[in-house]
Amino acid sequence: MSIAELIAVLFPHFVRLHVEYVRSVGRTVHVHARGREPSASCPDCGATSVRVHSRYERRISDTAVANQQTVLHLRVRRFFCDTGTCARTTFAEQIPDLTFRYGRSTILLRTVREGIALALGGRAAARLTEVLAIGLGKDALLRLIRALPDPEPRTVRVLGVDDFAMKKGNNYGTILIDIEVRRPVDVLPERSADSLADWLTKHPGAEIICRDRASCYAEGASRGAGTATQAADRYHLWRNLGDATERLVRRLRSHWSPPPLPKEQATLPEKAEGTRAGQARERHAAVHTLMAKGVSHTGIVAELRLDPKTVRKFMRAATPEELISGPTGRRSVLDDHAAYLIARFSEGCTSSDRLHKELVERGLAVSERTVRRFVHDLKKSSQPTSRPPVPKAREVTTAVLTHPDNRTEDDRVTLKEVRDRCPDLDSACDLIARFADILVNLRGQEKLEQWTTDAEASDLPELRGFATGLRKDWDAVMAGLSLHWNSGPVEGHVNRIKMLKRQMYGRAKPDLLRKRILLCR
Image (cartoon, rainbow, N blue to C red; front, side):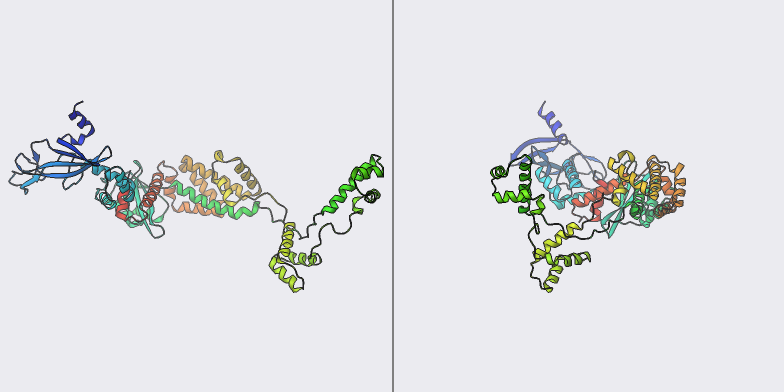
């Protein structure tokens, strides 16, 4: 392969150049070149001229070579325009696919910088361009984005509409999506019926409009495209049903929750048996075991190595309790006041600090720590008997709204138990399952009317309210549950907008955010 062929492969934008020489200085490659064509066309009248007026040098940045900055020193000619009617006297030549007027970079480099700026924003894009040896400041990169033209307007047959937050809770905009190609069409600076109606009036051709159930978008679509079919978003329909289901489950939770167990009467726990009592029981058992084997008193003394009087005492006692007299544990300073403390605890006074003050007022010198231990023992003894946990409302709601094939075994068991205990929840689950079948299989034309009638006739106020809401937006709901078009792509772009806003720290002006929404792939 010759040098010319190699340059044509590696640097196709240099095809129309005559490269004179190349030199390297530090991390910069300097390419000295001039145009190959003997003539140039006037940018105004298009006439070709061969008369050269003058020459000058342009310094143009190009994409990096081996991670080195590239500077093109281009020898440019200025031509005379010989057309008498043309307003221009002279003009500078432009190399096709390489240069543009007043440009300080090649078309290829500008395209690369624009792509990086659209994808990353200002600061992150500036850092990446430095690494790629095509460095440009963040402000210059943002100016590149703002200078980009908007996409060419086109007729949109299936339009998706949704809102997004400019500043959450304060300002909202509207994004319009071409559902068929899943690309943004336009961004409106506000969320209102007037703005949507104006846009639809200026851009006719919409046949289907996928939207959520917000009244402003319904009104705007009706005013701007009265003949278009409006389709309610299935995600929002299911979410509205989910909210109604959660309210219903919370209301019915008491039907399957067992009544609270009565609080047990506080009693003082028995004191642990002391070491001496335990030792007495062990010796008594050992002595009587040897006696049963026929061992004499002397033999037992020798075997256990005890005093003869002690062995005789254990031999005479029929049970160890005869040898254990008095309290089995250490006596406490609170023993004489235990009845008073138990009575106050049963009345609801469980504060150890309060009980300590009362004992001091009764003339007892006792530490707070001793009273705290006593109250702790009372609390342990008065705890109710444990019972199986009651499923939470959110857990039951999740089980109800989950497809039967995707429920876990625990969810199946829990749902069966609560449905057996609560007939209202059982009927609600049947209605919800029927609506899910309509939504998933798009059977609105066949079954939605009957389902809405059954929900309105049920004893469940939450589902009756949901059915009433469907009636208010009936045509859009029917279309949303019958047509395969949906607002899923719109929701995806709303999430993408959130990502773009985070990249720009939430401080992007509307014009810059709009450019990135429309142009960023």
